[in-house]
Length: 261
Image (cartoon, rainbow, N blue to C red; front, side, top):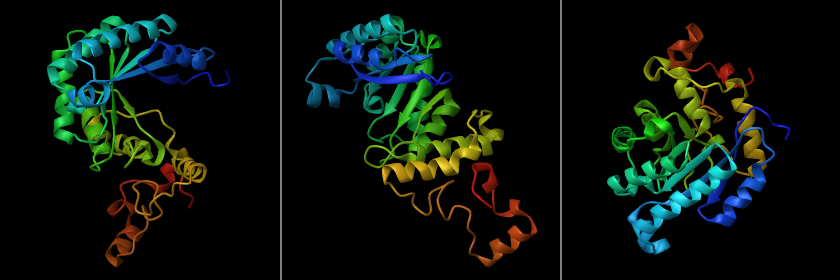
């Protein structure tokens, strides 16, 4: 009730009771969203869900329709999309958009994809899903191979316009896409991406420390953007350059992310 500007989203399994509970959680929000997810890879269908592609497709349609009956803003994730059979993935996306999904989120659930592959996947979705223009493309990457940020940035370059990310990159197993790295990559390399965000970057450092304190997960010292060593220079050559002109060895002004002088 108190937060008026952001979208408030509830994540839901693809079943009726879960979607009903998601609605109860967000119904007082000014801008509510329900996010439904369901596995799409044959690996998950065979070994986890024991369901056919046709059964999954029908579940996806029905549950997106149910969510859309509650809210105008529905997101759908075909879990393990990076390992799904492409033609089937396109079919699911087309079907859920027809059912009312306004955002389709493409997860690299186990951090399997490489940037080139993941970028191609986004590009191929834009080409092969006939009604994709009716939805926003989002991505959700995991960091099992240390590629979550790289994959997300390549997805942005190929047409994704929402990135699901976390402060300090915290998340399942090796973590998720780091919010601060995405934001500062877009800001620092606007010449390349031609995009930016509305994030107040001066709040990044203290927010990182707050999340670390509340979760008990320490920020590694060499973590990009917010690590203790991120703006420390030990090499004499580097120090000499910094004294003469900071741009010689710093591409980001520490003050821009709120690091105290």
